[in-house]
Amino acid sequence: MKITVSDLATVQFAGKQGFCAKGCRAWAKQNGFDWMEFVREGIDADRLAATGNPMALALIAQVMEQQGGLPPNMERGGLPPLMKAGASSRTP
Image 1: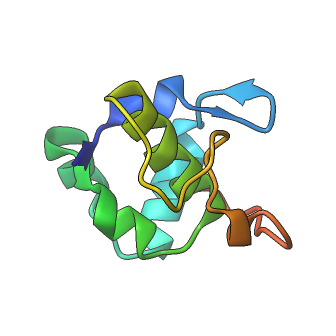
Image 2 (image 1 turned 60 degrees about the horizontal axis):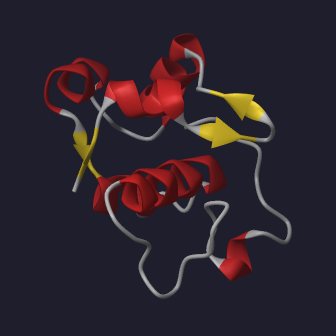
């Protein structure tokens, strides 16, 4: 499944809608993602999930829910149960 930049604008996280583009570009660079490739083609959800970032996991879960369902290890609200305690606040 591909995550697109439009998904970044629609995600709900911490009571707010959307992630800011500036923060997302910085996060992409920190994590070795090519921002322009992401803009043009999207990015595989598995690559985002591999970062373990709670905000990335929330984004993936919400996109999956919109497309028809969550995998068994995910809860509504976007995070796998083990990620909720002590979650990092780094921006995806």
